[in-house]
Structure formats: structure tokens, C-alpha cells
Length: 134
Image 1 (tube, rainbow, N blue to C red):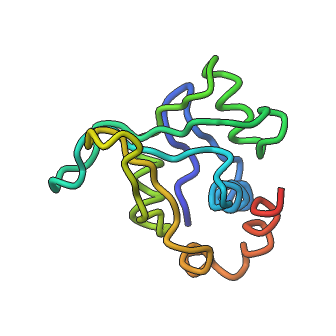
Image 2: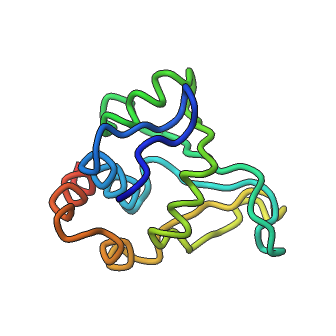
Image 3: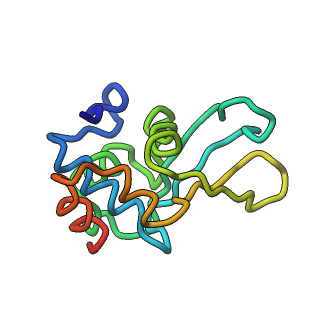
């Protein structure tokens, strides 16, 4: 069972597993409509100091958990370090690239759609693809 609450207060909160996997599907899209990234130098072996989501579309187009989180945050960025770590460690968001070359910010993307799908229990594949196709 996935964890449904990520953060106290403003954070990412799912009502149920269906919402969790729908949101995972949405975040797995290429190109990403919500960027997943970390700050600091995780290439040196340390976990990044912060994990964030950065929204680049109208919030009305987001799945409910992301819509609520970005509405409450007041801007287009959401600090959810543990959730980003979860995406990396449990859902194949292992491709990363450094947009600045400064080894500070690393954008995270899935290795492939198939790699993410392999992390989704069969009973939630419909939810995953609903989010992916939003």
C-alpha cells in the first residue's frame, strides 16, 4: 500500500490508492507538465536537500491532489522531499539531468513509461493510465 500523506499541512495528500496511482500516471507523462526535481549534489552520494514539484500548466488541468496542493502553496512550486524520494526509489524516476551545469538542481524523469508501469499493482493500472492520459 502506498503512503497517502506527504507533508504536514501544505503537502501532497491522496484520498485513496486510486488517486495516488492516477497522480503517478500524470507525473510520468513526457514531456512533463509538472517537473520533478531535487536540489544539491546527489551525484556525490548524498540525498538531495530538497525535492520539489514545479507546475507548468493551469492548475485546473491537474489531478485533484496536485490541484489542491498547488492551490494551497500559493505558487507553482511545492516542496515535497519525501514524495520526490519515493518517486526516485519506488517508481523509476531515475533519469536525471542538470539544466545549469552547476551540480545543484537535477530534474528527475522516469527511466521509461514501462519502468514506471512495472511499479504499479495491476489493480491500479486503470487509475495510472487515466492520469497519464489527462
